[in-house]
Length: 164
Image (cartoon, rainbow, N blue to C red; front, side, top):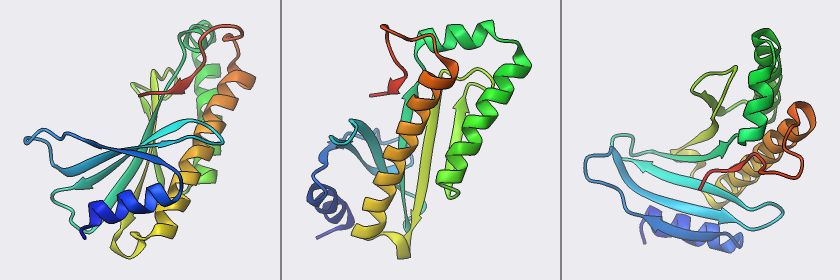
């Protein structure tokens, strides 16, 4: 059994839905999976095996910032937006110092927030993968909670949510 099959089995043992993703041949990814956590929050996590880094797996999620949250942020002075998003970034890094957190297209006015964690060869096991999934779910909860509580503006409308 190969690594991909092991990862699928380990995720399913955690009651996570898994589907294989078709990877274009020109992309430097050997294989990719979408893993959907159902509880306590519905979160989709991508699992990728790079072609050139054979001893690594990358687990990541993309969170789309709700239009209402973006509108509230756009109405704030730039300094306040930067301070607010720096606070969120600090919270995310405190939860997972090993994660890479990217605010796209820029920190003070993100459309999406990407959180990724690289697992190296000695970390590719059921415990590390399960722990990373739980960490990413927690990161998602912090992002959504932060936008709802600190930014506001999405009451009764669309919310900041996982990008699928």
